[in-house]
Image (cartoon, rainbow, N blue to C red):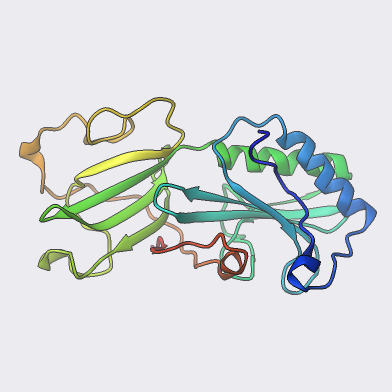
Length: 244
């Protein structure tokens, strides 16, 4: 993707910081990732190269966004230690990884090339997944929004405006009534027709069913805001991480 260069190593000296001290293996790992990423066909996303706060590894990450709303929906990172990597979904502002996530976290040992291939596969898989944004309205105004991977309904981020919410739904949780509309914000191949995305279970229902309680949602993993992205200008503008 020529308009979205992946894993560029920015010069920290431009911000008055010390230059990076990446070694040969770390530079080779980034170069191998960039080679793999040059053939990706995925929606635009932010990516970066640096080190975690404790400077214990090379850190490479991608961030999934709803660009229309200006919201960061989650980050996935790789911590490269030369002969092994730890990779998965970021769970806090220090870019620690959620090791309890069975479908994302992994630890691998191997050569630079093999590790780069494994990590590139993870990034490509995440970036290729469809993401839906679901909205609830009251008096014609959006008071609650939830983002999730559309294929599994795994929650990513949610936002509730308590000042706009009807009294029964004035808490911080996502409403237990049918949503008003939803749209694919990533993974859409053509314009959406109607108020519900093609993957929405309610798209075929009539307006007479609106307001009925929604079926139970799958359990959602706990994560927290990634503050380091704020410093780099890529942090979420509003909303909160989905909670169980």
